[in-house]
Length: 110
Length: 114
Image (cartoon, rainbow over all chains, first blue to last red; front, top):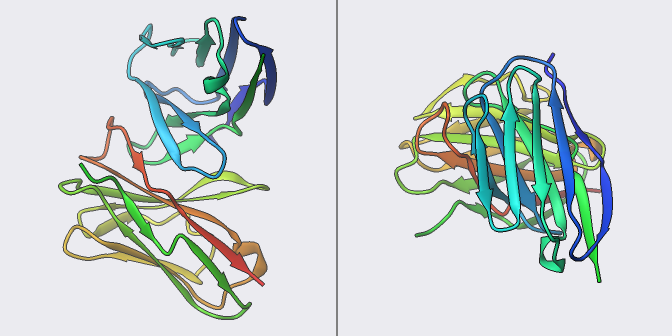
């Protein structure tokens, strides 16, 4: 059974600081996704990582994938309040079904 | 363009009643997915359609759950004889094809079973 573990599950950070969210998974996969969810809203796609060593950046967020270590990271640079949300990683091993982590609730404070 | 739409946005029902949840995928997307999000279980895969066929129904929690898709477009998720543990947000997603494609999610239907 595929397990997807995120840590931390809760993160409170000050504006301007840097931090990394980790996503470990238990079964070999070369497809990993990051989504953002605002309270009461649906899931918004952030990144799709499709190969070992893949790195993608959008604004203050950068995601990477190490398939050998079964690890993806989401790095936040100089956090701002607008980044407050829940971030989910998801792994796909069947070609269609996303297996999600429990999510990391991020709060950025002044 | 228009995203994935779902209806109703909220549904309150009594235990034992049947409910139908509707999903309109992004136009041209051949793959459609249903997920469920609850506090206790997180985000769970329910079922996947490629065209009108559902190759994998393994995520459906019980035989009270069924889904269909017609015309390669609209999908309906039906829950019969609802139970309180069915209370959750039901999310629909679609993608151009299955495989390494981004799944785009709809706003969800929030179901409360009293």
